[in-house]
Length: 94
Image 1 (cartoon, rainbow, N blue to C red):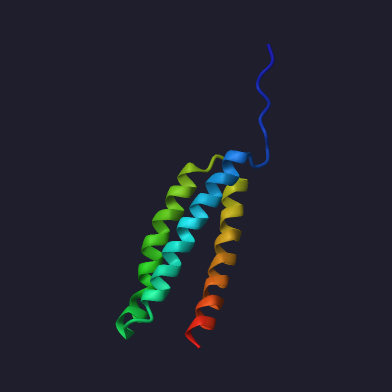
Image 2: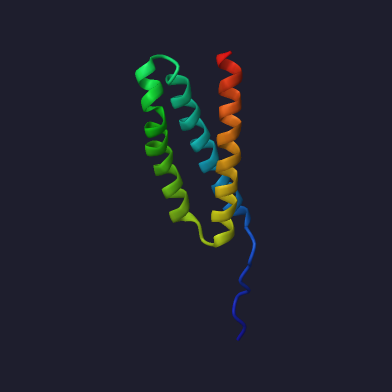
């Protein structure tokens, strides 16, 4: 009897999961960055709030991941989203 073939790459389910969690991560991060502009105290506390709430999303995503490729892709994606959000925020705040 033959065993099922294991795939080494990302399946469609993995790509959709990464996409959904990326959207949630982006919305939470962007919301806290916009709220940081309301008051100087929120600006100081903003990195902590972002780390706390987006950390929960990242933890859920990592628990759902089935292989290392998904985790690597998620890490690269998070860095690119973070730099894009900062650039967008700097453009808006000028």
